Amino acid sequence: MSHSPEHKKAAVLGSPIAHSLSPVLHRAAYDELGLSGWEYGRHEVDESGLPGFLEGLGPEWAGLSLTMPLKRTVIPLLDEITPTAASVEAVNTVVFTPDGRRRGDNTDIPGMLAALRERGVQQVERAAVLGAGATASSALAALARICTGEVTAYVRSAARADEMRGWGERLGVPVRTAPWDEAAAAFTAPLVIATTPAGSTDPLAAAVPDRPGTLFDVLYEPWPTALATAWADRGGAVVGGLDLLVHQAVLQVEQMTGRAPAPLAAMRRAGEAALAAR
Image 1 (cartoon, one colour):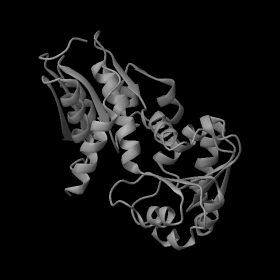
Image 2: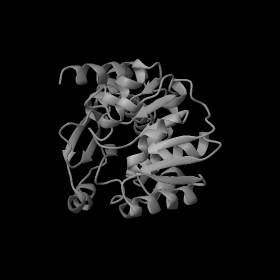
Image 3: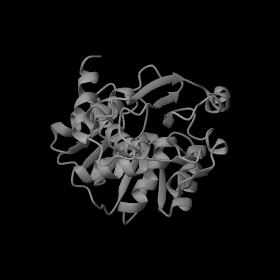
């Protein structure tokens, strides 16, 4: 792909979308890479509006970042998806190829792995996942590559428990489920991945043991969470939602622009500044 001043467009889609940090991260990357002809926006798009939005895009479009509720809705609208995206039936990245095809990928899974590697987590013998939504299935896909033993998922309902065991079977991860009211037991695991909405884990902060392992809390706002603060106070390693957001965005920038490596440090600085200003 040629360099600037070529005019190219990319954007993040979802609903709600107003608080997305993706534009901040991608624009920081374009600035650092000297892609002055590139622009990155955000568009409020729900499931019903997605087909029409895609049909209206011209040849200047390089790619899209997708957030909820579009990660599964988009799949039938694509020409191909990567094995990584297929493994969790979720696409967060669409790249428009030079021949006009729409290719879907999932950068959340390798983004999680990169964020953990950055903190020295290469492999664990067991792990715990708090929650059972879409991010939890991505967490299981990441754990399939680095966890040598069992993953315990702490969930709020029998239906969610069945879902997580199903994902475990599909992804090749032995998953045991436990009720949410036993979630404090998760903290004995060397790696805990919290995938629940803001406030959900606050009551668990008091249960963090002395000398905990690594906590990966996927939230970035509000940050730090009560759980992350308690974890760090007791000497545990903490990986946050901004780490995940930046690492998955790095992979998106590389795919959409054809330029690698994307400027991780500049993107992280931009994200931290934007959050501090809120």
